[in-house]
Image 1 (cartoon, one colour):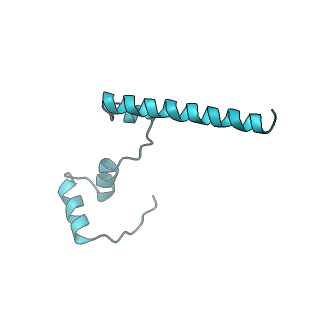
Image 2 (tube, helix red, strand yellow):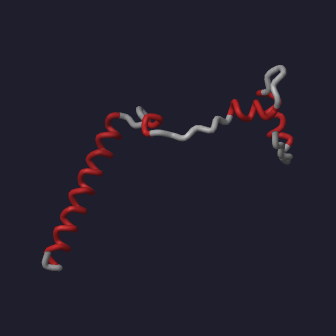
Image 3 (tube, helix red, strand yellow):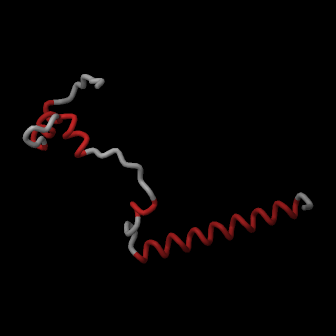
Amino acid sequence: MVTKTLTITQSAYDKLLANKQEKESFSQVIERIIPQKKKTLLDFAGTLSEKEAEAFKTRITQFRKEMNEEFDERQKRFGR
């Protein structure tokens, strides 16, 4: 097993120590409290209120409409 030496503040050490369980290494504390997890879309489910989600959806729809209109205009300008 490879080990690394880290320099941390006394405050950070105190926080780790306070979270350390009996017979748990500091590496185990860090692994437990800072999980290595990639976020998926489902992780964000429920973070917006219905009102916020509806406003977001409306803005996306408007943006797509504007982009499509701009694309159509460019096609007309270049004779396609």
